[in-house]
Length: 91
Image (spheres, rainbow, N blue to C red):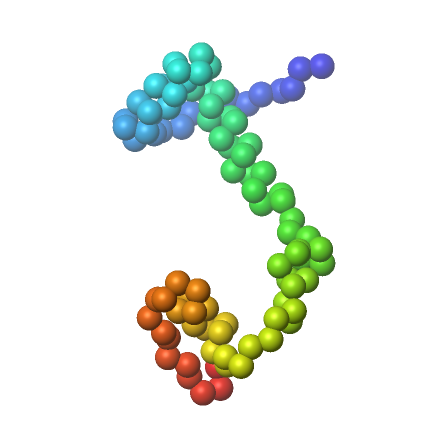
């Protein structure tokens, strides 16, 4: 059984449309096929749910101890040498 398709009209900036045409030619596909695939991928991102209960990074939380009290704010400083951020009282 064929899937029903709806026809639509979309306006693209000329540069973007030209890039789509070039990519379609490279792949031997239609511009419409590339747009459908990109739309499916974009919409599929929201469907992916994060399983926080089984997240390995969150399971490691609390595994290491440190005397550094601003690690959550200045982690880039400690990991990569970036400038430190000011820690506000009560934050």
